[in-house]
Image (cartoon, rainbow, N blue to C red):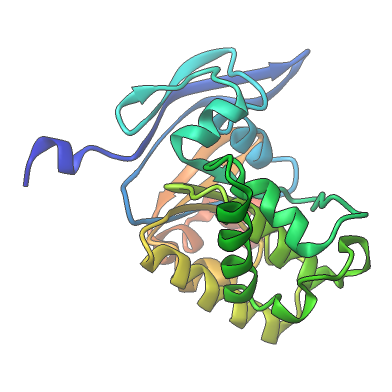
Length: 246
């Protein structure tokens, strides 16, 4: 295998971010290989979404470096990173509320084409693939939470990402909806999209992720396979307290 083929798709090197006296990411490093589903977990306030914001260009790190496909992208704005192939969803879904499901997804498709016919064609295909076909002409603000989650994912997929950052897309779903979402995430990966996901639903993390990074107060306290990290005393302590870890 060539050195290029072995090169990780995403590399973070010693990322640091502080808001005043609050350290939100501290000397964080990780590598994500093409084709992986890589999980990021940790208690609320651990710095997970801030890390996503740094990767996707919404906030710059104070120090450290981010490379994507071998290119230094540190501090690049979101629209440039979208063009390079980085897509993301947001923990709090933000559709264009007064527009239809199709219109919302078409906006994402325009990241790759200025031709409206092509954008609509791609958007329609993605809407149906994600099970929103019956809602295609529905106004976004009238969708259920599960359909809003699917719409958030559809908007991101319409930009044709090589790397997709999923921020708690399973939050608020029922057990059966979680199972459907697990299947959907696998399908997206199998179509060639590398995935990094923040998630609290451990059933999904265990089922999907090949590697998991655990954050606590902005620091890496564990990294490994899902089986390895859930047995780590530091991880148990961060989630449940010192007594449980003991």
